[in-house]
Image (tube, rainbow, N blue to C red; front, side):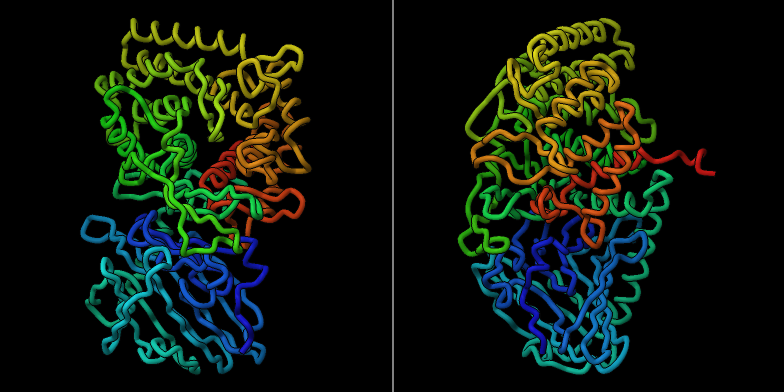
Length: 603
């Protein structure tokens, strides 16, 4: 049997994501479940081999080993979150593995059980397979107690029980016996519940209805003419990053995939950042995805209600948790042996003043988008004013900034601009609600902040905005100034800032978020969303041909399934950082919409 140990190819994050907006799973290009948190997106990783390389052939996975493995191919079924992995052996044998998490309409509601569906089909030859199911509990610290029935195996811990139900002889799986795959094998893994009909019939029903659900969902996307498949894949990925029960949107499916090899920049991203989520909502709105957007606005309203004094921490748990104490997991050795696997994120303790703008910008949709069922009203506006008053108080005060410096604080220009945006949008909402006096007041506040930013963040010697008041360094977040409406993309101020950023932050085809030393040294990898911001900035400045060429290059940097992580090594092109990263997929969507020829011009 060929060695199927996780090899160097695995480092390139050759993974796909499946899910149903309750939980998700990551599967590598050989069909191995390497990461899956249950029962929620932020739960205990019952498959954790992704962060346990030294024990990745011992525990924390679910795979199908093909004897004499030779090669594999992987794809998503068109316009779906259903994954197909095809494996060939060195004698012409071939199998196909279909993976998905059921999601469809049933009884007037969305059915999204805690369940993974997997079917293994023979395609050619006489392939011999071994099915290995090795879940763990408590971040790989607790092995399961295993019991079996006639058609199922239970995996228990003191707190949880999961069940594998199958039409394969249970002994083959329990004892990991190799067998010739003559007929299809179907498996369901998830909550300890019985099926209401046969395994095969349940699979056919769930597969067809899940495929129909995703196909219908994609039909209503307002996609650009060009790069349609790329945008659809990014949109589905954003959808899978939402926790539908509360409306929260996580930054990524994983924790602790480092930003660079041995960098110690290993963070838990299975949480809801107000800033990141604003960008997601903005992208979904442009695609016409109103349900997920509405869900997030409901999540935000719950956050708002819980902040009586108007103070906002930058990140919350998907169940609105405020305390996200960071801890290191000793039982996992880390991605590629990088160590330091973290759960929780101490960024919740930080002061990040851009959050007030993020909440108001997100909430503004409910006042102006007539498609939404719950329209913004006077009560919501008055609640948002609490955050506007915080923005007015804090716009020129030091904070950790959007890059979350842990041991230093400055008056960051981006945070100040977001405080300006908070006041500016409150003025527009007030005008929309025919509150003339309020509109005038908030407009005056916005003008005051803008004047202060122009005076203190502009460096006349550099002819550019800088990262902080009185500063002299570049920051990629300044590329967002035209998007936020602070300056025009063709203005001398922005063109000077763009030139300054190009000179200091651009390396080859990639953009760093900053280049100065931080708490962990000098950054080694580029930040993908910053490169997409740069692409948009080029387009804003009229350099469309450059923008299109760079966008096409970034599409080539995605993995084999069209997904991206947070970072790219500019020397090797290797993906690093938590995966799949919503920020990166949002950047792809915005750039595609901005650069695509219009439907009218296409014919």
